[in-house]
Image (cartoon, rainbow, N blue to C red):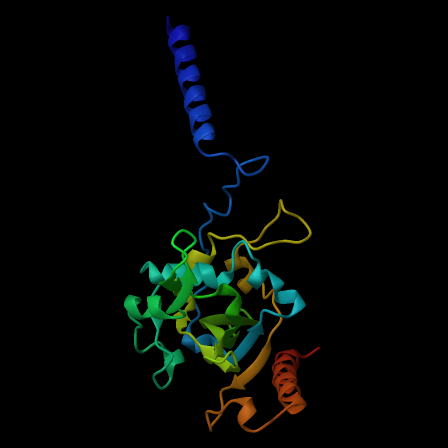
Length: 274
C-alpha cells in the first residue's frame, strides 16, 4: 500500500512537471537557474583608520568599442535592465540636471523617469479601406541603441590593514545621444545617476553574453567587479573640480587619461620595497 502511494505521488509530480513544461517551452537543452538564484557577496568593511591613500575617479565606458559590445547585446541591453527597474520603482535614480547630480542628493520621481526618451509623434496615413487620410498618434519609447556610453564614479582605496588596492564603484550613469528635431546629433546627455550598491542585487540576476562559451556566463555584477570592460578616465578629484576636457583637447585628453592611470599604478607599485 505504501509503495502504491509513493508510485502515485511520483506519477503526480511527473505529470505536474510535464504540464509546466508544456505551458512554458524550455529555450535550451537545460534550465539555467544559477544566475537567477545568485546572491550578491557583501563588500569587506574598510575602517577609515586603515585607509592609507584614496583617489576618486570618474571614467567613461563607450559601448561602441569592441570589448564593450556585450553592453549593447540586442537581446538584453544593460540600459534595458537599469531603466526597466527604475520605471517599476525597484531602483532609485537621481536627477543629473541639478548641481553635483552625481552626489545622489535629489531623487528623480518615477513619473519623470518614464518620460525620458518618450515622445509622441503625429503622422498622417492613408486608410486602406476608405482611402482617406487619417491622423494617428505614434508613441515612441526610449531607444536602447541610443545609449552609447556609461559613466562610472569610483573610489580607489589602499587598505593599509590588508595591503591591497581596492576599487569601489560608487555610481553609474547611462549616457545617450542628444538628437535635435532635425536629426542632428548635439552631443551626449546623462540620463540620471544610480547609486551602485543599490544596483548590484539587480545586476547579479542577469547574465552577460559570453562569445566563447554559452555554458559559462557571468552576471553583470561579475563583469563590473572583475573590471571586464574598456574605459577611459574623464575626471579625477582636483582642486578646480574640472573635467579633463576643460584643460586638454583632442589627443591630449587621452594622454592625460593615461597619465592619471599610470600615476595610480606607479603609486601602488612604489609602496612595496624589495
